[in-house]
Amino acid sequence: MTDIESLKKIVEESGNMVFFGGAGVSTESGIPDFRSVDGLYSQTYKYPPETILSHEFFMNNTEEFYHFYRNKILHLEAKPNDAHIKLAELEKKGKLRAVITQNIDGLHQLAGSKKVLELHGSVHRNYCIRCHQAYPVQAIQESQGVPLCNCGGTIKPDVVLYGEGLNNDVMKQSVAAITGAEVLIIGGTSLGVYPAAGLIDYYRGKNLVLVNKSATPMDTRANLIINGSIGKVFKQLKWSEK
Image (cartoon, rainbow, N blue to C red; front, side, top):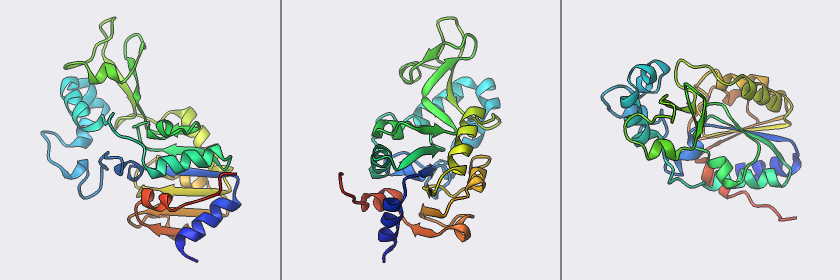
């Protein structure tokens, strides 16, 4: 039995799956990975990306933050790839209970997924840090310099910057989903970003599946490891429409 056939068998036999994904899920949609060889962290900017994408930098160098954010973080032209689409199909079939993602691009929702837990927030939600008025992503994209609210306050993306904590409610829901999952599929992540990666320790199910281009710290715990592009792997999953 091939790895793809093994994965298909696991999917067919389970009605309680959770998917945990990282940046690699969206690279095939044209959104660069942060830590890969050709990702953002390997490129050269006036400031290191990890510095720019911090709470302190946002507060003290807001205009420079937005120059980088508009050019390198917003990818509103991106479309869902085969991984996003297949996961939405699995949810519709009643097999996938939740998608837990480290990504902020909203592509899972665009593909049709309903239960998406966004650990690091979303570029599609933005709010004034003074009055908390909500704004769509277009308010950021179409503005010049620092986007301002009608009250004069600065508009901030609802994304988790370095130095900020994760949303407690999202974390609780993620822990509950992983703890109760029969099958956990991890894809497109090296599991190197904490505290998000630590969620995997709550898994108690019988089938842990890893789909990633490179090795991860969880490889020794996995029942099935597929080294490759998650979009290409998921594209090979076929099932009846009934």
